[in-house]
Amino acid sequence: MSTSKNFSRKDFLQTSALGMAAVFFGSSFTRGFDFSEKPYFNLKPIGRQLSLDSYYIWCSSPIWGDDGKVHLFYSRWKKEKGMGGWLNGSEICRAEADSPFHPFEHQQVILSPRGEGFWDATTCHNPLIKKVDGEWLLFFMGNSNGKTNTKRIGLATSKTLDGNWTRPDEPLLLPGEPGAWDDHCTTNPAFVKGNDGKYWLFYKSWNTHEYETQKGAVRGNRKYGLAKSDSPTGPYEKVSEHPVIDFSALPNNAQLEDAFVWEQNGKFHLIARDMGFYNHEYGLHLTSKNGLSWTKPKMAYLDMKSYITEPTPPKHLKRFGRLERPMLLMSKDGKKPQFLFGATQGGAFETSTTFVFEILNK
Image 1: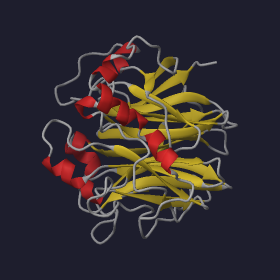
Image 2: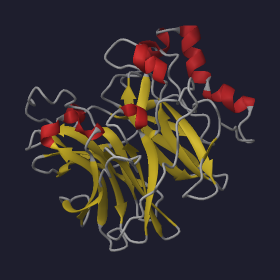
Image 3: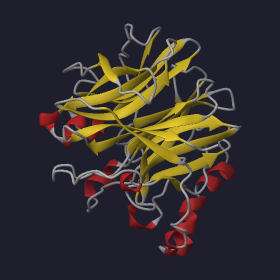
């Protein structure tokens, strides 16, 4: 694994500041935060805008199409598989709506598991749709054994949203060497054009030994790394042997997942699902000037009950009340977030659906 020439000791020390503070201050580090702070996004709920009978829906990535409609790339799997079906039977689909205020209608299956012998044999998940230089880029995750240790980020491309997608023969980004912080997998892609002229691909991973030996409800510690390329389609090179976002020195095995990154007014923003920094229901918001060092997390959004009231769910929906896989629909000029999309359990079919909020920030 090589190290970027642009990654200095100063950069590493900056990215480690959050963890170092926790080492010195212990659990008081998080106790000192003001939990009454206002979330970054001022949200108005629109509702469950995509629900499918007999399916769980997850990973809702929206984009404005050339036709003026909103195209939603989402993952789904059959209800009989239960919530864990995303790992061994998910497929990626496309839906359309005239706007986020309208219900989305399923249009087509984009990527399905290809079966034995392929790196994406058993699942296709984590879609992230982008457009660069007239080409549509669909970042996603596949695995080959129905388990987490073969999760790999891939990239499919197409000239049209409803056309034929070129499926990659190999993953776009591989895990680190055995023993590395990211030796388990690469997943949850987040993509943005950097201010250094390169394309930045953020990815989630964790260490296999920690994952296999730790006790508790959440095993392992999920961190984010960064890889860069001169081309949006790769090849991508990791900038460091270290993660760029790492909460592992904080109490309670704090971590994050489901990152989405965008550039706004010369600064890079990241939202993600909290996994123990505040709790497991909020969203986190961080900012950066260079993609390497990130600010202390603040609240991006609250739990679902802070915005809507719904009936008590059936017992099999154990993650009810969270908004996960947060994704943004930017303004048509790409300069400002306008809508927050996410996945949340519940709905008429007692599975999970796409939920949409309007962002009211001025």
